[in-house]
Structures are given as C-alpha cells and as structure tokens.
Amino acid sequence: MKFDAVLIPPRRAAAVAAGFWPDRTINDALDDGARHAPDKLALTAMRAEDGSLTRFTYRELARMADRVGVGLARLGVGAGDVVACQLPNWWQFTVMYLACSRIGAVMNPLMPIFRERELGFMLAHGEAKVFVVPRLFRGFDHEQMALGLQAQLPLLEHVIAVDGAGDNSFERLLSGPAWEQEADAQTILTRHRPGPDDVTQLIYTSGTTGEPKGAMHSANTLFSNILPYAERLGLGESDVVLMASPMAHQTGFMYGLMMPVILRAGAVLLDVWEPRKAIELIRAEGCTFTMASTPFLTDLARNVADSGLAVPTLRSFLCAGAPIPGPLVEQARAALGATVISAWGMTENGAVTTTLPGDDPERAVHSDGCPLPGVELKVADVDGSALPAGESGRLLLRACSNFGGYLKRPQWNNTDAEGWFDTGDLARLDERGYVRITGRSKDVIIRGGENIPVVEIEALLYKHPAVQQVAIVAYPDERLGERACAVVVPKPGQTLDMAGLVAFLKEQKIAQQYIPERLELRDAMPATPSGKIQKFKLREALRAAQA
Image 1: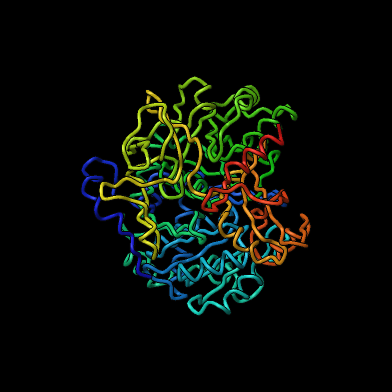
Image 2: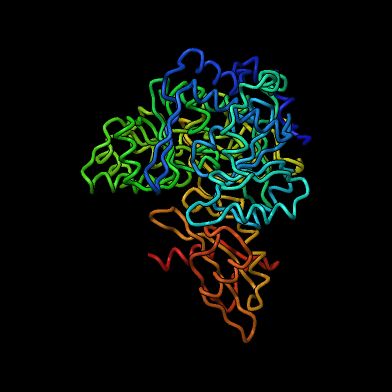
C-alpha cells in the first residue's frame, strides 16, 4: 500500500525542534519494557463472558509480539501492508498491533459492531491483506461474515479467526508455533522496522462525506499526544490502566493499548462493558486510571454506590465524547473518590484538551479543558478570523498530534497552508484558554461516544419505498448524551412505523448502533427558501417535546 500522509513531512522539522516529536516507535517502548522490567505485569485481559483472565509480563508480551510478527511474515505480510483487526478488547488485539509494528505492517482497527456494509468499504479502501476477527463474539459469527466478504475482495488474502477451529485459526497460524525461534526470525523482525514518521495506524472515522474516512497516523503523531497527556494527568510506570472502551476506537487504542507500553505501566482490558466486572477488576488489579465516555462513568458510579464495593485505587476517570452533567460529577466523586477529568479530541489528533487534575470540579462540567502542549486552538468566523473570548465559532486546531491525512482523499484533509485543521465543531474559548464545544458544523450524532454517520443512514432510508424526505437528528439522552431520531415525511398514501424502519436498515447490514431509536412522522420539513432542511428546528422540537 502506498500511503499519502502528506501532512507529516511539512511539519517534521518544527515538531522535532520543539521537542514534540520524540522519534520513537512502539517497538522502542516494548523493547525497553522487556529489557528493564521483564517480569513486570504488562497486560491483563478479561473475557466478561466467563471471567477468564490472560496475563503477560513485558518479557512474555515482547516474545508473543515477535512470534505473531514472524507468523504474519510467513503469510506474506510485509512493510506497508495493511492488517485489519476486528477484535474486541482481547489480548490478541494488543499483540496484533505490536506484531505489525515489528515487521512494518500497518494496523487497521475496526469496531466489532461493524457489519458487511461498513467493512466492505473499509477493507477495500484500505487494501487489507489480512483480516483478523473473533470466530464468535456476543453471539455473532464474525468468521462467516469475514469469509463472505473475502469472496468480494481480491486483495484480501487471509481471514484469520481467533478461537477458530480450522486451518485459518489465529492459534494455528500465529500464536501457537514458536515462530520467533526459527533461524531467520531475527532478520524478519528487524529488517523492516518502521520509522517514527511511517504510517503505523489506519483508522476510519465517520463524517459528513457519506463514506468513512481513513485517518493515517505515525508513531510521532501518536506519541506526541500520549506523552503530554500522561504527564498532565500524572500517569507513569506505577499506574494500572483499565480500558473497557473499544481498542478499535482511538480512545482504547491510544490510551489502553499504546500508553501503558510507552509508560511501562500495566493495562487491564475488559471486552464487554459490565460495571460489576469493571469494579471487580479495579479492586483485584489495583487500577488507578481509566478513560471512557459519559455512560461508562454513570454506570460505574451507580454500581459502586449500589453495591457498596469501593474502588479506592482509582484516582482519576477521564471522560470524553459527550458533556458531563453536573450532578454526575458530584455523584462520581462521592461514589468513586476519583477526580473526574473532562476532555475533547478526535480520531485525527487524540484527546488534545483536558481539564487539569487540580481544577475546580465544576470545570469538568462547564468546559472541555485546555490544550495540551503542542496544541493550539482558534475559534474563527466564517472567514477564518479569530473571534474574541466568549464568542462561538468554528474550532480550528493546529497540533503536533494531528494526523497525516485521509487515505486517498487528500481533498478532505481540511488543513490550510499554516497547518490549521478545521475540526468541523463549533466552540468558544474563555479568558483562560479553556474550550467548550457548543455544536457541530459537521452532520454527526455522537451516541455514547460512537459517531453515527448521518449522511449514510439518510441515504439508505431514501431508498425505502415509503420515504419522501428524511432527516436524522440528535435528541438528548441522560445516559448516552445523544440518540438518533429519524424524522420522515412519507410519500403520499404511504406510512412507516418504527418496526419497519428497523427491519429495513437491518436488511442493509449496518451496525445496530447506527439504527435510529426514534421515529417522527411529519407532513413537511422546516426548510430554508432554497429547500435545505433546517435540522436545528427539528432538534429544538425534539428537545421541547422531552421537556
């Protein structure tokens, strides 16, 4: 694969000179851990279904990464090849990224909720050579779906199933044989190690374009966020990070997979969010930090309070993806005894703003934090001119951690000649430089931290024989922040009910979480004189109906 990460070279000299790009890769961090703390516990992974635990020390983790790396090479994977991985938070996910990095391959993490429609596009667009899936997860047969997709994807050479029973099992092809002991293993593991500016991650994000966009990251762009993030939050090698957010999201990937290895800390993975399991893990493993969206914080605080099981080791909970309700901060502090940190970020740059651990708790309610070192924010009007503090406008960002661009879509990079990236969000800055996201100019709904690709879902609903007009808009939800409502104007003589809408979208093979959870039928849409649907009026009507 030829990667067009055009946003990386122009900023290299300045980023290195300023000390923001450390010129290190995850290989350096893992090697250091295996060398200096070989017997330290690096990774603990729980499968919620049966409570089973798998553990790796740093020595064992490095050995397994080498083993799987050689195994991938035996399958023909080389430098620059894309390995797609649709795994939950299992130990194999962490090892897959570390193994890819050993041989210069590029990891493409994919959410377990994705189905044929999303995966068909992403696997083709990213030219994946290998696709790693669970055989079964939460009752769904991922292996059969993947094999069905492979027949339509000529570049996809291998489907590998974790817990598989056939010749394509992860255990048989990658983790079982002692590949790292073979005569040529060290040559394979060292000859194509990636540099810090090579693309190491290809991760898809939904936007307003109607198709997912493949954001490209290098070790330097990722490290330059993770290091100041950890320093601000006071995280180090003595910490144990609980990660229940999917590692196929940037949250889980950067702060649950990469950050612990970089810090030589411990990571504890949970594959299915079950608050009681999370409490069990925090207590048993001494977890000190976690990061997740608001619903996770709500659930954890409520279950700690209800169960009476304290989590005294948990020092801080960083919350991102949706505003944090004021009462929740107090409930969480009382129940958990932890500091609640508010943050904002994107797949394209990581969590680039956070409140400070020493801030007044109200800061986490009323702001999304201040920039990390190496990050600049500007709130601008339509012409790009900076607006004064307190005024809402377009949020522009210039950051050392900004991505390398969108794969094969440089026209969508939204970055000007001075390096300002248009986030698509609306925001205001206060006098101290703290930002508050006030809206989104891009047409995306964030449901519990998960972006819903509105344009794509609307396009599918326009194919329904009863739909004349459709608009998908957000409505508030106490737990998830937002849910999606489909507002439909039916064709004359036609009608549509919720069951019919759900059944139609399920036939399109889209992720369950993308299906609207509410349906409103109307005779007409509010519109501008030019005919553009005024979604803000629909949102206002939905909020008023809930009041």
